[in-house]
Length: 158
Image (tube, rainbow, N blue to C red; front, side):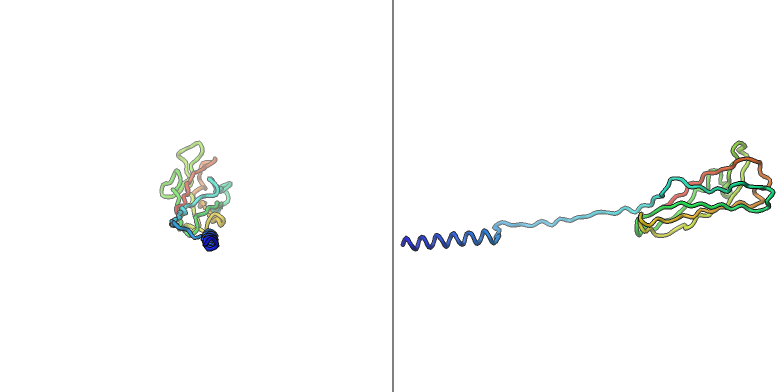
């Protein structure tokens, strides 16, 4: 009988070790974790300022004057954007530059921005905004000598 108890104890010990090694869990449970995030649709200019310089406006030239500049911006991948401008500080039927000292003198100019709309590809793929302008000869041929300027705010909207 002693031998039988010893054999039975050995069997119980072996079975206990098998259950421990096999990883049988007596009270297991699970939890489902939901993970989320939201990429914000945004657009940003690479620089806060840009320049459109017409240079010297020579009334003896008899010719229109053109100017060009550019800036870059990016929009979140897949975000549709539009470009707008506020027409400048002295807009009256179109953009105008004001004389530096005689605030009653203006020179009108044309302004073109391109592209005006599109879809962003992310910050690694910036978009070049081409800025062009022109001044008709008739608009500066009788202008007061001196410096003229304007400030135009360009906005990129997602």
